Amino acid sequence: MTGVRPSSLGSVADQRLDLSQLGDELAELVAKISDELTDIRRDLHAHPELGRQETRTTAVIHERLAAAGLTPTVLPGGSGVVCDIGHGDRTVALRADIDALPIDDEKEAVEYRSTVPGVCHACGHDVHTAILIGVGVVLAQLVQRQEFDGRVRLIFQPAEESMPGGAIDVIEAGVLDGVDRILALHCDPRQDVGGIGVRIGPITGSSDHVRVVLNSDGGHTARPHLTGDLVYALAKIVTDVPSILSRRVDPRAGLSVVWGTVRAGGAANAIPQNGEIAGTVRSLDARVWENAEAVVSRAVNDVAVAYGVDVTVDYTRGVPPVINDAASVRLIESVARTLLGDGRVETVEQSLGGEDFAWYLAHVPGALFRLGVQVPGTHDGGDLHQGTFDVDERAIDVGVRLLTAVALLDLDQARR
Image 1 (cartoon, helix red, strand yellow):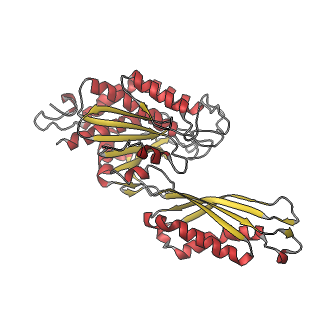
Image 2: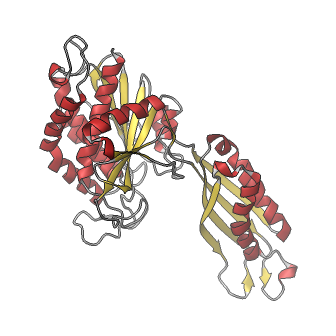
Image 3: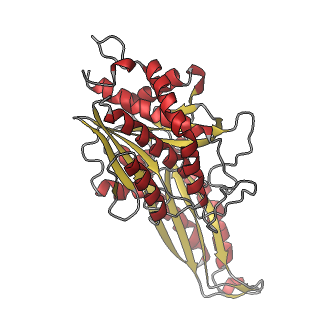
């Protein structure tokens, strides 16, 4: 007999996965490690590491998976882990990102507050990591009892918050070789714990970085007509470029430039010789993203030329939108409706947030879904990329059960 063990199947004749019974079994297995996974999450939260520096995090992952009887491998860069569980012709990959953000942890009343100044798990990657560790521990028990056929590949990816992101490193290391489908989740602080958000097609936006540097001769503020008024030119670029883009690109593409830094000058009565602004460029449309660099650069230059300043545009391409495969989304929905209930599955809007999971989907089909982490009835957990961000840790158990069941359902459907 192949597939998940008979206790989780329907009739022996059709050997179909019984999701309801599997859900009960997974709940029992996950309950046994729930406290441990919470402790792991809190440990990672207290000891965050930035992209491509996640050596301690990597050691925690490697140690726990090895203790479960698995054979994890550290990725070539020294951070990140890949681990195969099971054997068979089909491989489904599950990905978690493991890096933190260069943000101060502003939570005061929690014992797991970051111990690293200026670094914080403000995007939930500590939760993602704890969940995938839990999936590995559960699957290790199942495969030891020969309860499923096929291979599940766990990918603990470094540097998701970096640009270029760690997904590119993982792909170049050959980790996607032989993978038939890849799946991931992401914490959603706007959705209650116990629920998920799904979407067929694009679920995130593209995300690039742009830096604009201006130079001029500088001069006295009493005589701006004798020099390039650099601060005024910067201000015009800040305000006019977003407006210009709305007239040069189909507004349905949602091309957006938002500035995050402005630096120039040091004296109120002196026009500085140099200054810079930097921000992000985002789009809802993959085709518009392909041409965004040229469009934004031209708009910046068109504004700057009127003010007699020299301009340099430093544009860094980041990630395209994450475009979910329809079959993968239906797979996730099927599992979630059975394990969580119909009312716990929500179709969500596309976000302008960037996610380098998009690079995996350029190679194999798959999907990213949103995991509710908000304490029901509250709205005080903070938003993503804020130092106040926190989660309802019951989401860890939910994530483990969902990812494990989705992987097993994928393998079960593929063999029939």
